[in-house]
Image 1 (cartoon, rainbow, N blue to C red):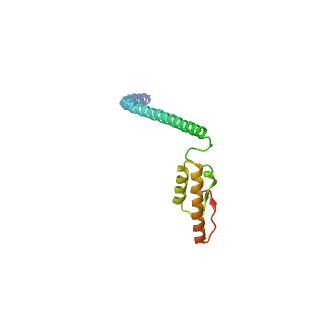
Image 2: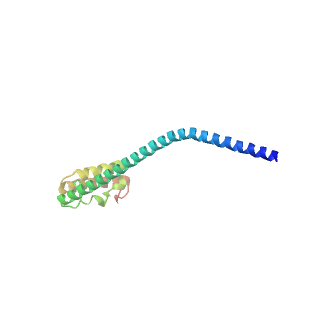
Image 3: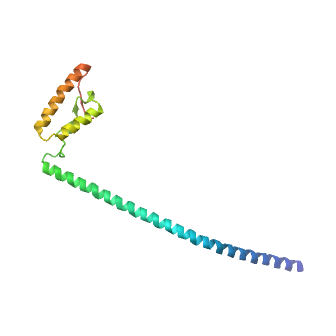
Length: 149
């Protein structure tokens, strides 16, 4: 029985010592935990600020897109042609001889055609281009095609 009591006392003492050690360790970690909590809080605040900034940027982007669309609509109404200013009527119909042109030539063609002010200028430009493409087609021995690209 003495052995049991001694053993019980030893176990109780060990438990008390272990719990004191755990409390002391918890207090030490608690200090670190507060620092960690402060760092975590700062990171959280920074993340929230970044999210707010991203949300504001998206809102500004939407406003810019809406403004551009409204401007385009106004240009269409003022132009009266239903096409954006600077873009020729029928410009979306393709390019005669496009199969005989390089990508750079097609881009240059679109730019030049889009920069012309009157329908007469556009018609004259397209006729001149058609003649050039017919000559090129004859030289290469292929047919000139209207391409969408």
